[in-house]
Image (cartoon, rainbow, N blue to C red; front, side, top):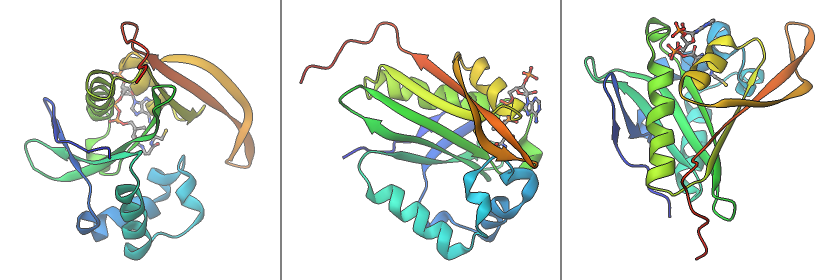
Length: 184
Ligand SMILES: CC(C)(COP(=O)(O)OP(=O)(O)OC[C@H]1O[C@@H](n2cnc3c(N)ncnc32)[C@H](O)[C@@H]1OP(=O)(O)O)[C@@H](O)C(=O)NCCC(=O)NCCS
């Protein structure tokens, strides 16, 4: 069973997100077109019930870690970050995040959250690699991953549809160079 531990950084802390953490504000983030424009969840109007279902599903699976991102100073819930699914055989996982509170954009929060989760994945879960993907237009996301030490590994051409055009997906990855293959 994968635990989602408390992780603390300079500006933020990450705490396992529970169904009880689904507030109206959280639901609004997911229905705001300026926030959800690069999220696949945008195709459906989200409700408290759909969000609670999503959170409950993630917490019931044993191959994901799912955190709420909280501001150290204000204690406000400002976003979410997920590591998973974790592939134990190949010691890798996928990472994805959302900073839903727009007043926190551009302050290095995404970069810090990615760093906290990546360090946890490499040091505590002994993963060898973490991968991510983003729309080519999502410059903020791409930059945050690059600042957290991820590298561009490739491009999936015309992978999404965005603003009436097909759009490429940028594949990003970070490798823990000194990790060992887990033979257990
Ligand atoms: C994209 C997102 C994660 C960026 O979060 P953030 O906390 O603002 O990112 P950071 O502050 O760590 O920014 C990292 C870099 O990207 C830049 N950046 C952030 N948003 C940007 C944007 N919209 N356009 C261009 N650059 C941007 C920052 O200025 C910073 O660069 P700098 O240090 O050179 O100034 C956030 O806007 C978000 O969650 N958006 C909605 C959901 C989403 O798109 N999630 C990602 C799905 S892959």
